[in-house]
Length: 472
DNA sequence: TGAAATGTTGGGGCG
DNA sequence: ACGCCCCAACATTTC
Image (cartoon, rainbow, N blue to C red; front, side):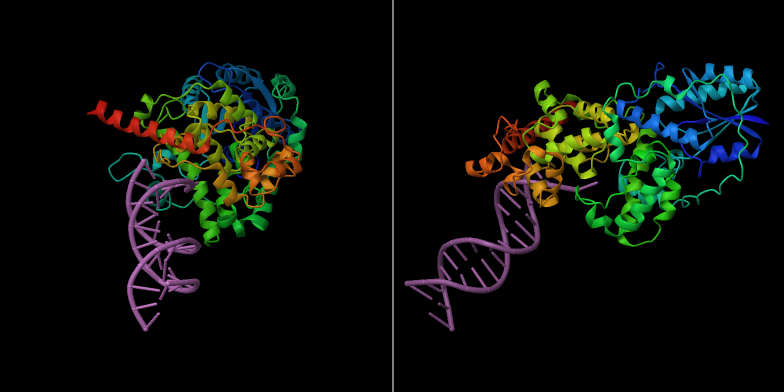
C-alpha cells in the first residue's frame, strides 16, 4: 500500500495514532498543506505562523527531509498527489474547529468516491466531544459536572502508543519547500522568541520534563504567580500537537493535589473543545444572548494603549508586554488583562480575542474564544459580570516583590512596591528617585480603576434588567 | 479563577 | 471588676 499521512495539528512522531496506523500498512508519504487562506478557513495569526514555520522545520528534519509541503485547497492537492504518486490511502488525525470538521467530511466524501480509503484518528483530545452528554442527552454547559460526571466517569484516557518500529517514507517531487509557505515574512523580530522557547517535538518533551521535575510539585499554589516557574508552558506545544495530551495525562498521574489540579486544567482544555464542538458559533457569538444588547465602547485610543502595554497600570502593562515580547502570557495575567479590557474599558471581548489570536503562540480557536467568553461573563460557565479584577490588588497578591513587573517594564525598574503597583499614588520624591516621570517615561492611568469599576457594575446591571424586560 | 461593603467578634485601653 | 469604646481581624453579603 502507498498512503499519504496528512500532518495538521499533530506535528509529532511519538504517540501519533494516524501516522502509526499508516506505517503499519506500507509506505507513507508525509505531507503538510497550508490551507487556512481558503474561504471558510480561520486564518492563523502571525505568531502562530512563526511557530508553525519552526515546528514544521523541526518535524521535517526528524523525517529526514521527506516532509512535502503544499498550499491551497486540500482536495485539489490530494487529487494531484494521488495521480502523481499512485496513492491508495489517506490518513489524518482529527481537528475540531467547525470549519475544519465541515471541510474534512467533504474531503472524505470526495476522496472516497474516487476510490481512496480515508482514515481519521484522535490525536488531540482525551475524550471525544460526541461521547459525553448529560443524562438528559444534552451537552454539558458547566465545567465541573462536565469534567467530573462526564470525563472522569468515562473510560480513562488511553496510554501513549508504542513507537512505530520503522516507518518507510515515500518522497515526492511535486512538493514545495517550507520557505514557499511564507510563514515568517510578517514577523521580522522573531529571533528574540528563540530565547524563550524550544520549538518542536523535542522541545515539547523537554518542557514536560522540566515541569515534572521542577514545577508540578508546587503547581497548585505556585501557578498563580506569574514570575514563578511553576506552570508547564506546554500550551503552544499542545496546540500544534508537538506532544499529545495523552502522554502528558499519563505523566501526571500521581493523585496528589498538584497532579489533580494540573489534570483539571487539561480538563478545561477539553471543555473548550467540547463547547466549540457543540456550539460552533462560540468564536463569533455571545454564548449568553443577553449580552448581545450590551453597548460596548468604541475606544480606539484605549484599545491601542492596552495592546501596547501603555495603560499606565503596571500589572496590566507588564502582561501585555510579556505577550509582545515572548508570544505568551501567564494564565492569571490573561484574566487580569481580559477583565481590564472588558470591564474597566468596556471594550468588546472580540477585540481582545483577535489581538491574542495574532500574538499568542498558543492561539487556539477553542481555548481563545472560550477564555474570552469566560472573562467577559457571556460564556456558558463564565465569570459573573460583577467579578472585576483590581489590577493593583492582583499585583499585591500575586507579584508581591514586583519581580514580574520589573521583568517586563524596564522603565519602572527602580520603583519598588507598593508604589510600583500604582505609580500615580507615589509621592513625588519616590518617583524622582526612581527616574519615573508620569506622562513622559510612563503613562498616567488611562482610566480610574475605582470609577470604571462602578461604571461597569452599573452598565452590566442595566443589561440584566433590560434583558429581563425584553425576554418576558 | 474578585473586590468592596457590611456585619460580627474579641481583646485591650481606659474611666 | 465592670462597662464602654475602639479597632483589627475575620466572616458574610452584595455587586
